[in-house]
Length: 253
Ligand code: B12
Picture (cartoon, rainbow, N blue to C red):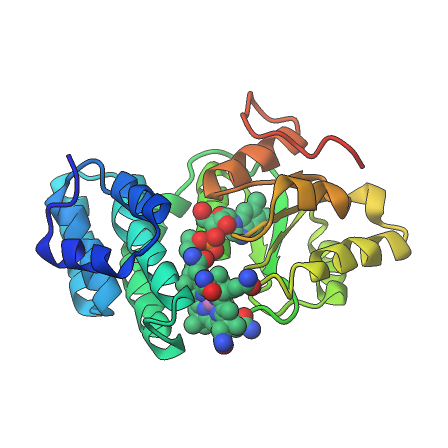
């Protein structure tokens, strides 16, 4: 199975690199027309249609996770490539991001619903200078869904704001998100700030975001790295010694 939506097929013309074409085709491997229609509407920035179709999918029995991955995140992957290659610009990306949010409104109550007692307290924020929050918000939804109490510091979060929130909420884990190579160093600076305040051994600091890697996480002395929202939850559980989670905390510190 592959791409069956005509509009999406045309979108493939914008993707010049073969490996990226393959990657995108892989995202649509299920060949599901409704999921592909959601992706296409997101790429067009049509928030009303995205909202309606996400709701329709839920009514038809699709899971929130499948709609997120096969519809919303897959569409965002095409937006990312078009943005990088200067085919679209910030306003179009913002419109697509709004369309994604229109879909997430319906998924959030499901992804965040939890019937388990609180597993621990986490503070999450996008680091200083960085305004990207879609991935962080997804992590927060999944963490809440898994039973964690999560305090969201939003975007552009200074190291001292992470420290204040850690103290105020008595958090066991601080999660930092960065989407820009220029803001990634603020993860290291935040870790250093915890160190300078004599708090480094009282909290676990975890990192993620598209440009962040396991190696980078290790180099800056983070306690763990997760490549997506599922790994974020696994990592949090593992660091707090809950259940048999899959994600690997960073080995060397
Ligand atoms: C949407 C978007 C925007 C929107 C953001 C809207 C919003 N509310 O977030 C807007 C238009 C505002 C924007 C602005 C800019 N952007 Co922008 N943006 C993107 C885009 C297209 C998608 C990002 C996204 O939402 N992905 C979907 C989510 C689901 O994925 P994610 O964020 O990676 O999150 C997942 C994982 O990483 C992980 N995760 C995330 N955080 C955490 C945290 C922890 C603790 C853990 C464990 C895991 C984890 O789990 C998440 C869920 O699975 C990316 C391209 C891309 N493909 O990444 C460019 C991109 C990140 N942007 C880019 C750029 C250059 C910019 C601007 C500088 C453009 C400009 N000239 O102004 C500005 C910077 C503004 C700023 N100061 O932050 C570049 C960065 C290049 C680089 N190497 O640094 C990218 C890569 C585009 C590109 N290909 O060139 N952008």
